[in-house]
Length: 99
Image (cartoon, rainbow, N blue to C red; front, side, top):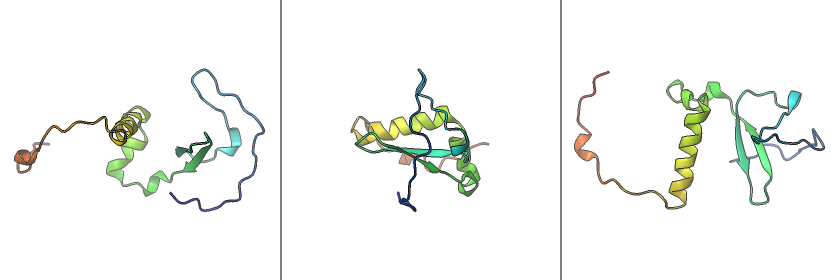
C-alpha cells in the first residue's frame, strides 16, 4: 500500500459508532467504495477505490459486501495458519465446463 499524500487534516473532532460499528462521515466521504485499513495502534485509514479500474469480471466482489467479507475472512484465516490442504485438483484441470 502506498499513501500518496501524508497531509491529513481533521474532518471531525469526534464521531460515535452505532451498535453495528457504523460511522457517518457525511460530505467527507465522497467516494463510493473504500478499502479500509487498520494499523496496530487502532488507527483506521479509508482509501478510496476507483471501482472502474477493477476488471469487470472481478468488480462484483467489491459490490457485494457479504462476499467480500467472506473472502477477507478467508485471507485472514489463511494468514493465521487456520487453512487446511485439500490436496491437488490437477486431475480436474482439463475438464470441459458447460456454461
